[in-house]
Image 1 (cartoon, one colour):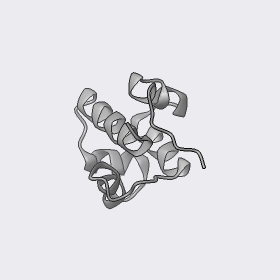
Image 2 (spheres, rainbow, N blue to C red; image 1 turned 90 degrees about the vertical axis):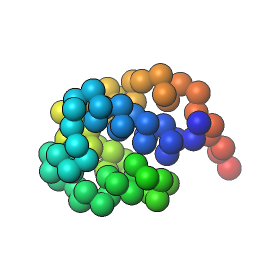
Image 3 (cartoon, one colour; image 1 turned 45 degrees about the vertical axis):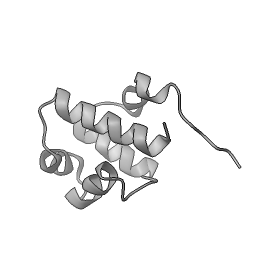
Image 4 (cartoon, rainbow, N blue to C red; image 1 turned 180 degrees about the horizontal axis):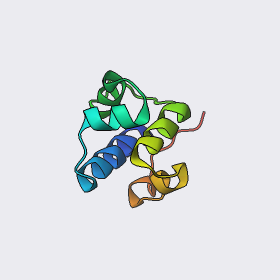
Amino acid sequence: MEINEAIKARINKLLYERNMSVNKLSTMSGIMQSTVESILNGRSNNPTIGTICKICGGFNISVGEFFNDKVFDNLDIDIK
C-alpha cells in the first residue's frame, strides 16, 4: 500500500469510528471540504504534513495517534 492510500484509509476509519461526516471534519479542522474530499477520492496524492496536522486537530488526536495504526505498517515506499 502506498502512503496516500494509507492516509485515505486512516481518515475513512476515523470518520467511521466517530460517526463523522467529511463536512464536519472539514469544519473541525479548519480546512476546505474539497481538500478532504480530494484526499479521500485520490485526487490529492501527496497531502502535506500541515494538512494532516489540521485533520488530526479536527479529530482531536495527535499526529502520532494518527500514524499509530496498522495501515501504516507495510507501506510501499520508493526512496529515490
